[in-house]
Image (cartoon, rainbow over the protein chains, first blue to last red):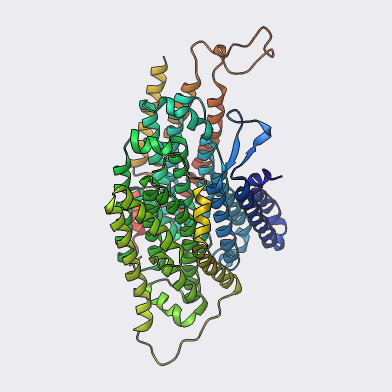
Length: 490
Length: 122
């Protein structure tokens, strides 16, 4: 039984998508119940998976009973279980949020196809977290990307051109990844991650493996919008419907960082990256640049949605840097930050969505208005701000602490400075919103308080509590992640 | 012989990449993507090909012994079957988007579209 959880976590959203597609048009009334059932079962499956790996450390599932390297396997260790939990947790929040947000944005006739793609996207994300095969990663990238393109393009006329550019960039990234996998296959004759990790050390000094490493990392960088390749991301995300954004913005880029960790840490091994290839300085420069540039854009922009997009760009820098630092603490920090950042981003995006729908815009003045008119949203916003800044009991503090510790231990002081600058900028940024509230000129007519609909309030409150809880339970997660780290960390 | 097919694959990939990045016309960009993917498919197929080998189908259930040298590697072909499906889906989606863009902006040219796209203080 225990090994079934890995498949269920991925299969439940997939079959929900199929049922949604066939039932949605015939009986639209049942649609939201199908979705609610699907997402609830999926969350249960991810909790089951989590409790199983808490005791067993490792869960495998072999399709058709064929053992790897011949068959295809799902392999779940503790890090993937955390990712599955993250995907389903965020997806559940985003689904509740979309119940109210989607009718504001799309006509009801499009809801069945929207939710079909929505669940397909969720199952793609989960499958990326649990798969144990490098070629499957490519296919799942495309499963996520294709359903994602369609969901993003539903933002209407403005979304078409950015989405078209995203189609080109996303396919390019995935194709680079695929060529890299081809080079690995030529040299080793296998596609299974664990088997590759066994075989690769014998051919470490081959030039094909070097080419494979470069192509795969560049492909993943494009997919995850690391700084020089980030151009597609802010445009496409700001034009998309908010309900799509709740799912895509937190998960789309984070899961690519996870795949990067899987490929660099477990397939190529940390030793290859640090000692044989010695790419660490280049990668750290990229990560530092990503943080600095993202931060600069954050200061420059004046709309909350756009600000969130560039916060994501700089947070990607944190995680990539954490992985390539190669210290035990920094990798734990990076993994912890993937989950923490997914939770922070989904909260921020939901806040932006509520502000956009209830107050009609997301410029700084509108957001400042939120403190007067939308108290629940404002509380959630303050909590998530504290986490982005990195105030102690929040998860943002612990991941930054570990990353800075790792940076000092391996001597990349620039990265540590960039992290601190990002924190300070976040303080500056969020105080612009608070300032707007405290010093805003008000006419004497006190603006009325708007009650958020329940579908907005529940996910916001749960996400805020979840953030605090995730931060407070840090020592548990530290021990949890520590047991699944790749070998060869300093 | 193998060098030739790899060279063709690389040439196709570079052609496609160039078209994707430098052409202004959206349809040409999509054609570039298709050419790029074709290059990758050829690259993978060349990997599994062998001198004097045939398609990997056992016609008489292996009477008289099966020699792996007689058959091309089926794995790369199966992988590319998946990649072809993905490529078709991507191309279809890209063309649908291009059609929407044309309906809205009346042009496939990127410059014209960008000129129309500029909005005050977006």
